[in-house]
Length: 418
Ligand code: RNT
Ligand code: ZN
Image 1: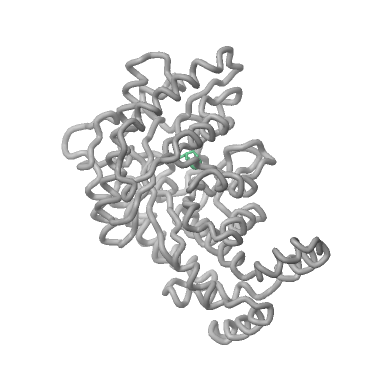
Image 2: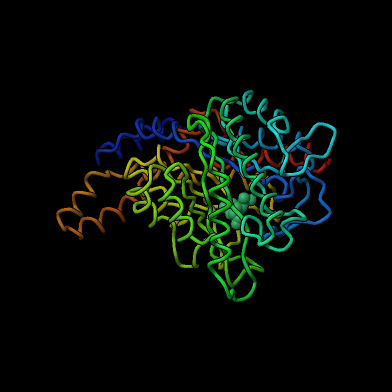
């Protein structure tokens, strides 16, 4: 049956429970997803480092065809974007800089190192988000950066984060779309920390220095990302959730970032959004999929992804929740990874829009928990797929699994020739 016919039937069925599928589609068209460039090159960056990835981050797998130059990475993202419907941003990291001729260390990167990224984004009509890269560098090899006891090392990373804010502002100005600048540091210890206050006090002082200058909030806004543990940083992270929660509450210009993999294994970020947004204007999400630990698996349409989307949609939070993806899997085709994770995030948002939200809220307010449970379960098998397919067709991207064939062709023609 044609996509249109299926959609017509689905539209009718949803209309019967008071859900307007056309409206849902229009709503989805206005929710940008920030797609992380680092899935395309296994978080390697382009600095030609001798050392590999560190900071407790790990990418496993050696699937062929990873991007080795900025142009390859942008080409791969362009191709992935052609398979993902709706508005997108690209999320880049400082170590994807393209300095002209001379090597520019992280503390002295300038907007000029990012003109290619900016030109590309303008061409693609997308916004850009930014991240200082406080890992995979000689000065992060002690496992401490902004909280390092050595003043010189600390200053190096402070300068790097200040430069990153300026670059983010530049990217916001160039693209006309505000850029989020997200600060995550790997700082912590493998084994039990004896003095937990001193490193946190140093991190706080560093952040205050980084944030001292007010930048134009029309173009950039900072976020800070916590973490509970990592491989090699099992015992103690300086930037814990409580630390950055406190920082965000005291500094309303700075958003708190919630990464789905950065909490204890059964703790979920979906249940934090409602509380956070009673106290902050905005938050940043790193949508990821932890498996037993912060493993950064490709996002699938699982219960937690749907719970995250439901929190955003049921409460009209889409203008206050910045949705960014953060996963990296080198065991499968990297473009497929982007497409799967991005499309699933959008599917989850759409599925959440296809519930009669007011009716279900009312059942709950009336203490009618039978109706609440019965209907939420029944609505799970309503024909959401027909609406998704129609949306993809409208947006000019492949419907259903048709994108996979295109990825295979690109793999053969482009990736395997690298
Ligand atoms: C690390 C954080 C961080 C990184 C990226 C590469 O645990 O999740 O967001 O994944 O900055
Ligand atoms: Zn993250």
